Image 1 (spheres, rainbow, N blue to C red):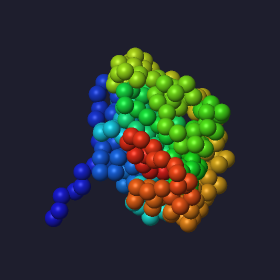
Image 2: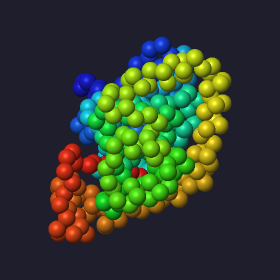
Image 3: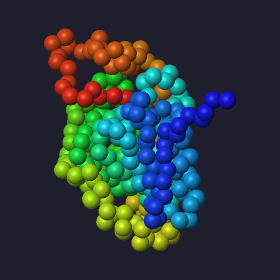
Length: 270
């Protein structure tokens, strides 16, 4: 019999905090069907554990999350799975804190939007790359738009520009920017405060600050999942994703446009 595959999400518990580490280096922690399923299961387990006061979501490697796994065929179930994952984070009775020291693209930004608190350290960079692939930040808008500066959201949704941790904090994407550090020092007082909270106090306080986000899910989940599925199945998106995987410009790009410098962007969002 073959050995079971290594988990894509690793869990560890220490002093009231369950740490969930995204560990899928072969695709830069992209939101594959398997990773989404494992992360939902790990979050649910933390939610049931009476010892847990909060969940810390972090990553291995230089990428927190690259967005959708473009190697998987697009499907309506993929959009529904991302909706369920994001809602699980928002509804979890335990606070969820993100620690980011790498690149975050497209659908990965939805994870940050769903988290209650987040810190970005040295090496963090962010970009909404969907429009460049023939897509749109559909499903991830539910946790993001209630929290983002609207003028900044318009700029970065439309242009796909990269921005750094300081800008991410300014526009409300992350809570704390620690561009010279690893985010651990910045998160230490946050985690200490969460450890001191009572289960009931934390759950009800979180319910207050996530009410607008949950209303967005109640109102928009179905139409945005349908929009996502339609866009992913479109000819324009197929060209955009194929061009990305082939490391070339898509057909609609001006021929005199120079490629972005630095680490290639990856992934997409539903």
